[in-house]
Length: 241
Image (cartoon, rainbow, N blue to C red; front, side, top):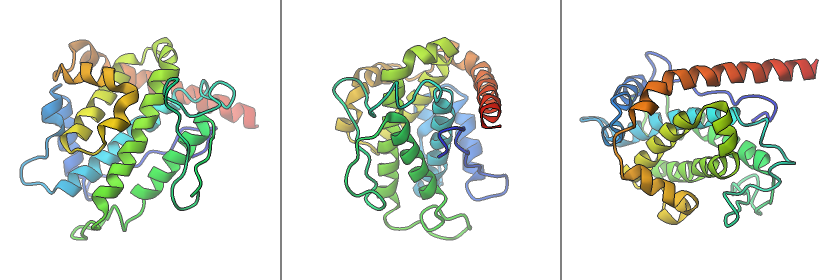
């Protein structure tokens, strides 16, 4: 991940494997009923559903964090934390085996690059129809979601005021609520990992329907995000020239 730019999104193109499930996911999410939005559609394979949604959650988090990159620097966030009680050290077990204390921006760079490598690995996320998922697919998915949660935890604890100033709180809450209902439906993340946002999660679970204000504001928030990203990219291009 380039810390000077927005993370490249993973597209599920029309006609490709998983595109139909992507359309179903978007339609059910539009209903505002989170329980319905995360359920495995009738007749569909679980691993296919997990794969499509993993890519979509990765994209959502990439966009959200992209709006905060100017605020999340080595100076403002010298460690990757989620409040005063939780600090995360980076290790992927392959390139980095000894846990490292790094800034939040570096940690999220490592994390998002690692996730990108997983979803681009056709041995894990097969693109060709009929190619089976590997036996360890679910275990990899669980690690991906555990790590993606940490980005949400950092954004809420360290950058929520920035989210408010950008007018993106409804969109952040909508995306995170969708994330929480999904990992809860398929038991993807242990409760102890969710502790930094436990109170917020309980509030979200207490209300399955999205507030109308969140639904009605979603297209506007997405447009604001895109405009903010374009401004960031233009500013970076000017600085690099």
